[in-house]
Image (cartoon, rainbow, N blue to C red; front, side, top):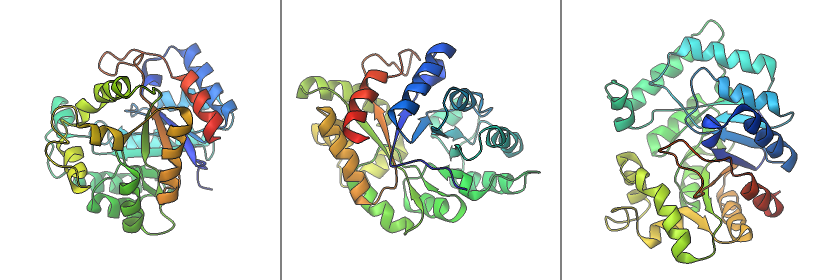
Amino acid sequence: MAVLLGQVGVWSPSFAWTEPDALAAAAAELDTLGYGALWIGAAPADLALPEQVLAASSRLAVATGIVNVWTTEPAPLAAAYHRLNTAYPDRFLLGLGISHARVVEGLGREYTRPLAHLGQFLDGLDGADDPVPAQARVLAALRPRALELSARRARGAHPYLVTPEYTVAARAALGDGVLLAPDQKVVLATDPGAARELARSNLGYYLTMPNYVANLQALGFDADDVAGSGSDRLVDALYAWGTPAQAAQRVRDHLDAGADHVAVQVISADVNLAARTGRPTVEEWRALAAELL
């Protein structure tokens, strides 16, 4: 059986640094609220973190968003996948991606022919002693060649930093029957200045990554939009800010555009990605659940 994600999940980086008791409480809360899945950002390749979340919940699906394929080898990752799938059948989805040049080069690796490297990594998963089935993995994909690979060699695609308009085009490229699970960033603030300031504190980092910038420009945003930490037009397109009801409407826009599942990422002033500090945004997940679930 395929992992059942439901229509709406949560994408969160904060589980990576949350103490075990708080992690277990947050996972149990997501389970109770009825979200379909938790996507764990930048998940370690040993899969110990998703294993903790699975152990703390009874129904919730867990996906990695993503495991960086430059940080591990296929054989140990395949073994870790089967460890989780044996203990928690049909609740874990392996999300894989090629990351970014500056991240990979910071690890001392040469970032050459990344899509070919991903293909070779998938070959390794296929050729492991206990292979990882294509339907058990999803690829971080943005541009046409990556989307094609995700349709051909995985269950589907998990695009990041995208708009509902992108989702329309991605669905057309993938065709029917292929999982399309974009993320949607949410800022629960109704003051335009405060909401955009918080969004820019998150967006600025991504606008230093050429692959994200290229994809945004392909969507029609110009050089002024992607300069610095982004124009108002870009911020408003990528971040659903306002009330929980307004944020929920943006999620529905993705679903109407052809998404099968939307991973909601709450942007909070309490979470500092660079410092790896901040709480799981449980209060915001509750507020959104009232509108989405």
